[in-house]
Image 1: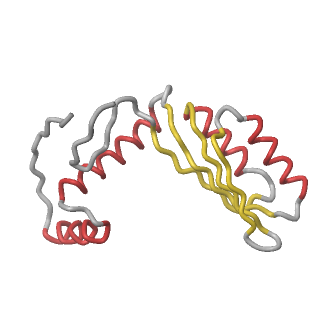
Image 2 (image 1 turned 90 degrees about the vertical axis):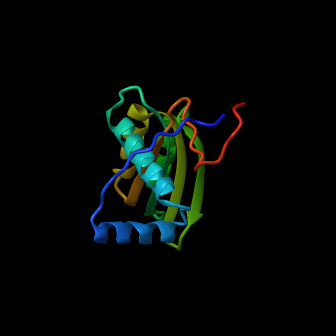
Length: 151
């Protein structure tokens, strides 16, 4: 089903327009409209995640930790098990003799995902951690102008 499109005009100074066109080329957008739509989707998603109390989301938590601390591995695993209904999958990578990287895919209420992620990242021995979130907004279809059939 094709969505109805609405046109609007924006004015940019020449330098900003040139930098925007360079960004469009680097990222492979077909035109300015596609790029503006993506920027708007991203900003609206961030706004939704930050302010909607009942927001549902998916996230990927990536963290690097000290493998030599055996108790840390157990604590991290225990935390994932405590959030078992949020954890969809995890990947464990041995970076070197002392460090491991884990990537955990989380899905559920944002107000539960964020505290779980923070509790993992704040563990002593976790050297780096970051959560990347995306909202699950019911009914939203992102097509880049390509028509998609509704199932």
